[in-house]
Image (cartoon, rainbow, N blue to C red; front, side, top):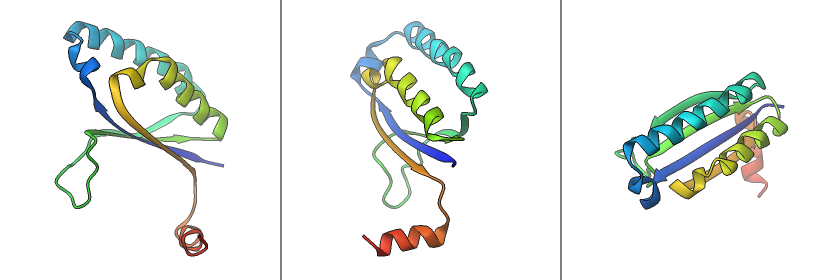
Length: 112
């Protein structure tokens, strides 16, 4: 069953304290680590800056939406994010869920 991860994140003071070269080196290492996960079926649907001008916008600056063929591959990316030290550099929120159609979603809401 398809799984999705939505990440919301904002650079923190530790990230801002890094030099440009340190940031670039760190991000190059993150990019290199992604190659194996892409081979496992991880798909980045979008990686973007958040439009803060919309109604009810998040206070976070960035958004990532990922697709996975199953929970195991999703967990592999989450483990990699944590192991990379990402959470040391960003205020970060994760949300994971399985694929669901509109009617099933409305039914889940009604049954809470």
